[in-house]
Length: 449
Ligand SMILES: C[S@@+](CC[C@H](N)C(=O)[O-])C[C@H]1O[C@@H](n2cnc3c(N)ncnc32)[C@H](O)[C@@H]1O
Ligand SMILES: [Zn+2]
Image 1 (cartoon, rainbow, N blue to C red):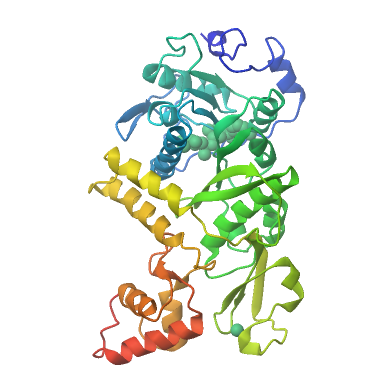
Image 2 (cartoon, rainbow, N blue to C red; image 1 turned 90 degrees about the horizontal axis):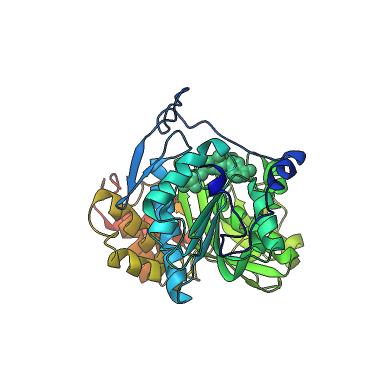
């Protein structure tokens, strides 16, 4: 049973890993970095010592066994988004979708819902071999009618697999590396194994690094010195994209985000990047973000402006109240065109209807479209911060958004933080507008948000 599931060059439609018995001793000789985090008691299933556990999960009509693998039902929106992006990619390239799920856990959704023609399902934990294979085979036969392989299961360290696929010139339309913490050592090999124009789905779950509490750590992982900022969860997404951009640039590629998704459970930062050929230049959206603790003003800086960082509240003088993070991605977090296609597909599939589960997906996609406006700078402004700086009650989000738009500013809600807005209006002007709103209303009208 086990051996029949191994990749074999005689049966696979794609170039294969080295023939047996090479792979096992080969993998044992080299240090392999594998993390297997025990799921939290609330979200993960208890391990049974004797027989493998069987726990059924259902997502968008697809049933699969989660066993005692690392599976979080809260990550469903992240998986929905991955499947939608993969399906859009399949449609726009006219079919032939090949997916490499480098840390797959037990998930089978690319194969079933994105109708991938081939899925390479890899998870370093060999104990899940039967689980993954039985999930895949109960959905789609291992070999297609034409005799080509539809899926393969392996248990390599993700980085080793990605390097090997690259060396075999076996490229994928989508590579998903759903890693833990701020692991990043595989990013360059993942980029190398994606087709030009293909997609790379990356994860970070390190809220300490994005929060600016481990700047040396974020520097090691993503090349970014991150300081505490009030919009740290957006900084987390920008740190991850920037880290990937740096790795891509080293080998003559660039990446651009199609969508960027933050979820508070974990926390989880997920970015879907498109890989293409190119080199960094002055308009590459890879620079620095400053925040002034004194006045709340944020600004972006290019590399050439590094000696000129200051805040308008200090008339260009050096100030300890200004914190700077970077280099980070400073461009839009999403592609309007790509997310619009994903939303259209979600509606076509009935994934964007009124049930509680579906509405979260639709809401996120709509917010991504709003946030993708190229006029919007990095960061978001918490309404409570406007209120406390202006010494007023917190303004309702809808009222301040209307007022900002009337004044000609771009403004929308943030998908990351409830009760926060993204706008190109500076903090000082937001305070003026919020005060005017309060003055125009009867007293106490700002108490509820
Ligand atoms: C966050 S879970 C994956 C969840 C899955 N993508 C999903 O959506 O349900 C990460 C998985 O990576 C596996 N893993 C950890 N380190 C690895 C490595 N170095 N190479 C490959 N897999 C690894 C773990 O066994 C775990 O199943
Ligand atoms: Zn200032």
